[in-house]
Amino acid sequence: MPATHHVFRAQLTSARRREGFIFFLFGAATYFVLLCGAVVIGTIVVRGAGTVFQARAPFINTTFFTEAPESLHVFQYQGRKMELGDAAFRTFEAAHPDVAKGKSDSYVYSAGGIFPCIVGTVLLVVGSMAIALTLGVCAAIYLNEYARDGTFIRFVRLAILNLAGVPSIVFGLFGFGMFVIFFGWNVSLLAGWFTLAFMVLPVIITASEESLKAVPKGFREGSLALGATKWQTIIKNVLPYALPGILTSSILGIARVAGETAPIMFTAAYVVRDKLPWQVDKFSDFFFQGVMALPYHIYVVSSKIPQNEYTERVQYGTAFVFLLIVALIATASIVLRNRLRNRYKW
Amino acid sequence: MVITAPILMDTLPSAPTIRPATAPAPAATAPAGQAAPAAETLIDIDHVDFFYGQSQALHDVSLQIEDKKVTAFIGPSGCGKSTLLRCLNRMNDLIDGTRVAKGSIKIRGVDIHQADVDVIELRKRVGMVFQKSNPFPKSIYENITFGLRLQGVTNKARLDEVVEKSLRGAALWDEVKDRLNASGLGLSGGQQQRLCIARAIAVEPEVILMDEPCSALDPVATAKVEELIQELRTRFTIVIVTHNMQQAARCSDKTAFFYMGKLIEYADTRNIFTNPANAQTEAYVSGRFG
Ligand SMILES: Nc1ncnc2c1ncn2[C@@H]1O[C@H](COP(=O)(O)OP(=O)(O)O)[C@@H](O)[C@H]1O
Ligand SMILES: [Mg+2]
Image 1 (cartoon, helix red, strand yellow):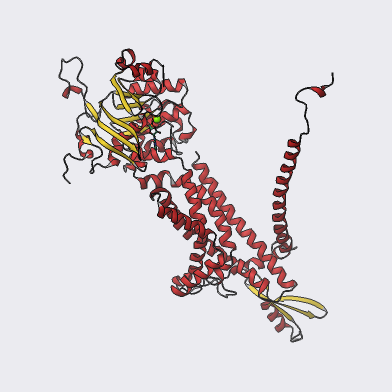
Image 2 (cartoon, each protein chain N blue to C red):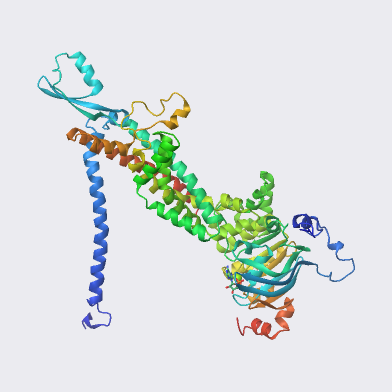
């Protein structure tokens, strides 16, 4: 007997068809997003790779990572096309007086490297995340563990949520007015740290609060029932378990802090600076110096100077390095997070 | 304000029966030759009304819990057993809007809601084991020493000693002695609950409150915890909430039956189960409702 007439025979009903169509749409949406991400990252990687890597050993363009930006001189010499950075060009000129004066084209920022920008961005990220995590975790502990829910606390929460939606340029202008002008810190690391920290604070506070909420009530009660004070309970038996979650949220914060240009353009970033951050006369000067930064450098190179094939190399190279650094910092926090999570698993 | 009684932390340690170690014999309270020494009241609950915000959970509850005895609270779900238990170490303070509106709870004559009572000291004396076992996500060793470390004990030898003593006390030592540094969460459900009991006895409380300690355990693990309660009864005053009537019958000396926030009957366990005075109690213990 043929099996086509049993009761469970598959039938293509309209509900089935609709389901198939809807799932196809969901899948398509997901893969579309994935595709967009891949195109963006792929472009940067493909076009930046020429700057970051090289054909000769050690295969990485170390100059790009270790030198400051220079002007690029492009000129003809004995029928060959030469491309030399500023310093190299001067040496060359001195050695070959027959280089035709004035016959070379020069392109700013297109030679050398981006070392000061890397250093500046790392300093900005570390400092602002330290400030944001300290303030954010304290605020979250207060809101979640101590504050009694009421109209005022609801208002505070609402304010924090709204702050998360404020455009970063507004934080930049706030930082400029508050730290640079009113506090008189000038364009400095310190002003940039606080401006960036304020920008990510809402996210960190909200996420920290969620992480604290996720710690089971039993851990708190168990500790209190043993005669711990509330503070002892929080420090020994709540916060350690919430830290992995807090770190997860700060990973997003790191990417944002590292990448935003608007908050630092008035508060901390220099277009170009000869000295490196540790080349200061006295220690306190360290906090009051401006720095170069990767996102700002990309902005300057791609919109503040004439565009050509030489600047394009720097743009994509810098963007590529920027991606690498964000990935590196994020990986470090993920590793740290996983360590903590394994230690306190529940 | 006039302070009418010495504060709790001064009173409790000076009481002669507080530590088994410091009370060599009950001779002080029971004159030689007397067959059954009159039980001493440890906790005196006197006409207590308790509210969660506007809703009243306990109505005029009065009972005396005796020293070094096991007292069971039974009754259908939602009748206020946990509420009363959590009043005894003021865990209800953690919930906003709760209050004891009337009456008092005295432990060794000290009203625990008095303004000068330090709730931290109270909770050191009145330990608690929760319905859902809650070992901390730390090592077994750290779980046991948590309470002592809070009190500032750092001496390794002393901590080691307490860990062994408490784990032995909770009948868990042989099972975990080789893995004291493993996470307490790696233990089975029954072991976890015994770990929580060990953690509670490590700070040497006078009273241990247990809120349905076996409700999530299988019969074998339940039997172990019940055995443990039998061993602990000589050293601690135990108050146990249970919805398992056989358990109350097996473990306890006295049983209190609650219904709808009221204490219906409180008597020797034997009487409650064989010869209850109240018709509701009888209906409940014979399984006709609840
Ligand atoms: N946190 C709380 N907030 C408000 N009402 C509560 C809370 N906990 C318990 N109750 C109420 O108090 C009554 C007694 O609860 P509970 O003491 O937990 O009962 P039991 O432990 O006997 O099952 C119930 O009606 C319950 O709904
Ligand atoms: Mg209960």
